[in-house]
Length: 294
Image (cartoon, rainbow, N blue to C red; front, side, top):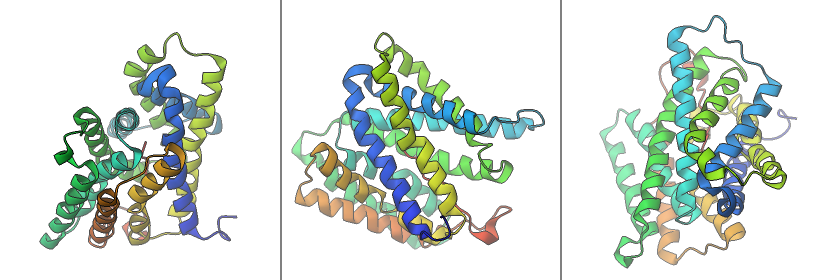
């Protein structure tokens, strides 16, 4: 199937599933809280990945183990911080702010000083999205989104290293359980006493939307897409977040906010043109890392 379906559709489907997972997760916030929802999703996802692939822990070098554990911690904080942001600010705004993380990574990899204009453009877009001059900005929600963006940047760097050291689902079958344990630190206290069978069943469904199905689709897409193609597609995520928030959560953006999203997407596309990976064992194949957001 993966050879007949265009690779870009697999990547876009993965991003759409990520945003749908974030939107539908809000239904559990009143029951188990955003951190509890994050922990539940990651735990169910970990169980599914472990059922598909039992990790071979013997023979893993100390440095490799530290990298994969660090990636799991970053993923757990990323997911928890992002859902905490979505609990307080619109989905599209949270995604745009979070996107500053991978945008920063792309710019850092560029050797062209002119690429510094792209983060500036994205920052203008974020300001238009948050409209701080209105006096109604949720500082805590924005802080959670910024934390999520920092973790996303860390996730990208560490995933690239893990991808160089582990094949197939081996890395995911370790990092996702570590992410679930990380999210448990704040998620279990929120969710404790509210874990009915309906909530657990919802957690299974949400775990399919992220991490199970998107990561699987990304693995298929990444075999056939270059860094430039995939990075450009990834820049569409803020726009997908806005559309998902509009359709699923009835979060209608104002005209200035629409302009803000366009600026962030433009900055992402522009930064990616100079942010290709040029080192590592698979650099000649232009392999890139999964999105992994939310």
